[in-house]
Image (cartoon, rainbow over all chains, first blue to last red; front, side, top):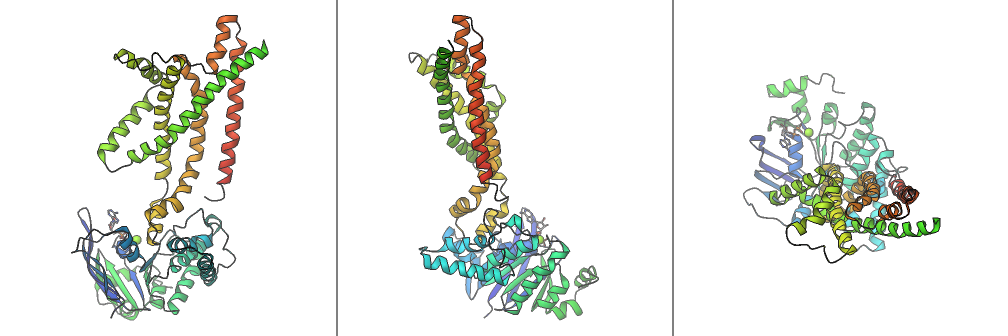
Length: 256
Length: 218
Ligand SMILES: Nc1ncnc2c1ncn2[C@@H]1O[C@H](COP(=O)(O)OP(=O)(O)O)[C@@H](O)[C@H]1O
Ligand SMILES: [Mg+2]
């Protein structure tokens, strides 16, 4: 059974169809890259998976559990919605760290708030886990820095640790390096790469073609709200079947 | 004479501070309600509130004081009469609370809307409840952003209380002026300025301290 099964997702904003019949599956431990030009619906798809947008059609299933079914317009309680959200994590293009908290507090805030009874033992466990995650991100000396004291690359790594702290089934990245200076993209790509090596299940929207080719098990090329082509990195980057894919890739003359 | 004047002015200053403090006490929470209403999706709430804010911010506070004090009598319902000075003070308080609630509501609205939507979304994808997002993520950011405009507005309020003079509330200017009439002395009126200066100075220090406390993040 696939870990994630997305079937026939549709999304309209007013009268424009932004996502049209989006279907794909992924297995546990896989990294899936989504590529495509600006405006093709990549962000909207990630937002649908994280329940920041409500799709107009289709279903989303994780481990056989149907999290979303557009044909059942049931009114969900906030509580149920929150539980479903926790299957997914999202790393934003512009980080969205909480400015009034230190790096470590950013990572531990949500897990602490989620505790039923916050005794010192559980709080200590969360702190320790937070420190461990920051260490994995190469930020062990930055625990007590506030976001404005960190570089963009460091902020994005804190954001990745923050998302990992809740141990989502699937971690989504929306162009995690697009807001960074070229000098700083490398350090962020490096930690995502190491997550891929540890078989973290990830969906990565990116314009870094060389990176997508290296780390992904599957690549999805989106064009105008549809999946124009999907396959292994080899299939997409070396012998794309669709003319559109070829055209899009030719815009990236020097993929790493 | 100096002692007599000082004691008289202190009495007036007590009224000034009372009007100031009570105005804040009521208009700070009322302003928050108005700002939430003015951002509400319910048009029946939103538009009347926006209209009220437009009227109050578009007319002089002095005029509002007079309308609220004399208006009821003209309409055949002289609510403030028979209460003497208390009636005048109450009318002034009502006018100040309405006026300042509207100004504060705009400050709150600016503060709330200046928090990027990404902050709410980050909280949501981390599984926080709406209440948690408000209390733990948004609130402090709003407070940080509203402290500078709030301190401006509150310092303006200190000086605006003198407008209550037009309906003969016995605040400090009224008291200072009384010496002009009875003793032909003008300096007590000028002396009132010292009280305002000291009070505003104190508030400036207080707000400066709060701003500094909140300067650890951006
Ligand atoms: N909230 C919204 N309201 C209206 N249109 C939107 C909204 N969000 C995105 N869109 C439109 O949907 C299309 C896809 O956007 P997006 O998912 O951001 O694409 P991508 O991430 O691939 O650049 C764009 O044409 C965009 O203008
Ligand atoms: Mg996008």
